[in-house]
Image (cartoon, rainbow, N blue to C red):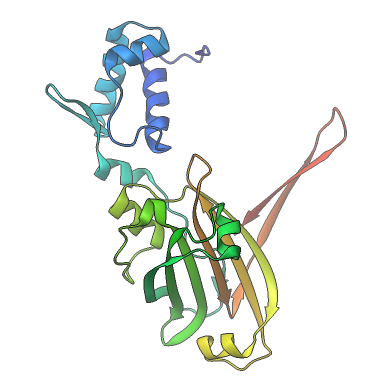
Length: 250
């Protein structure tokens, strides 16, 4: 189970437990020391050392007679939440999302298909405008999985969506896939963005998941006056001469 990398055994186990905490495998408390000792096939004292190290770092805390619990405040500091959009805007002012509406509704066929839900499943529909100063540069519709966020009653204009979800519910999407499509601004979008119809926009579709690959959010954004820069890292496998590419947004 453990490779020889020079680390003491208890630190290797500590790092595994920490990764489980960060990936939400453990969401509230840790399994008992005896259970972990049996899983890792080590003495209970080794597990105690590993947990002591996590306690000293503030990631977990012990309650006498109850167990070892995750420190939510410390956990939040380890997350780097995904931004609401990955594009950059030409305008010098920082972009800020302004909430237009938040309501409970049912998933139609398109939303249900994108989120892997049954048609009619409860979702939270969030509409936001993206502004830079007095200029509207984007519009976003997001659908949040009602099974996870059914008690969501408020999203404010301060902070990212994911940071607010994490603070309110203890978890937020940890991975996302986005597709970018150039589209022509129609009359509806022109009214929303306060621009003339016929201009070029980016349509951005995002599907965001938790560590168990469950879709927590599906969103469609239309942005104006934005740029997306991609860095492509390519390498060739000497064994089969195949090329492998990784695309990174910047």
